[in-house]
Figure 1: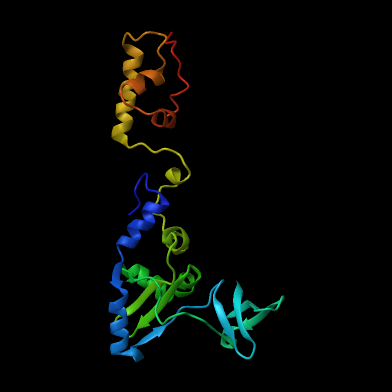
Figure 2 (figure 1 turned 60 degrees about the horizontal axis):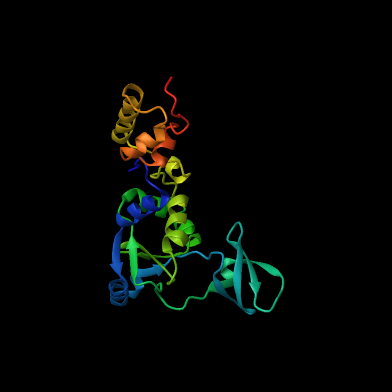
Length: 229
């Protein structure tokens, strides 16, 4: 799936497009038809609002080890260390806010979700995850009005360990395909062997036949001047 020149954004978009998308209302109807078949398995994550039994509401500030979390109770200054059984996450509704939910389209992703800690990772990336005994796992985003790719999908893509993107492209280095590169060097050969005025630089010549400064610089050719002697 890795492709030369692909950015992380493009890779994440391609991954998401391979998933199965379902309207919110469809999932809601399935849940209402057999509510006992569905369980939300989302794990608490940093930033979640919670109700701490016997103490009131607060917010998770740290995810600690062994099912413990750092929580700041409202109107209290200090962070307390609490086990997951000492509180419950406060959600506004049974299902996520956004109008669509997804399931993975690849069995390798399903295995990662079920067996390799994917539920916890997805929870930390801002997804709410549900399990149906009949239909499997579904997940959604409890938010609206911001960039889901920057906030959720790209962090999940990275946490999943996918490497479909091109590191050179992502780092800002221009990547040229082989056909375009062959055309560029044909232009370089023409510059060397043809009767082109000496005051014309290679960049000017290559610009004149349709190559951008970025393409020329990517091959280290911009340093060549007009003197062909």
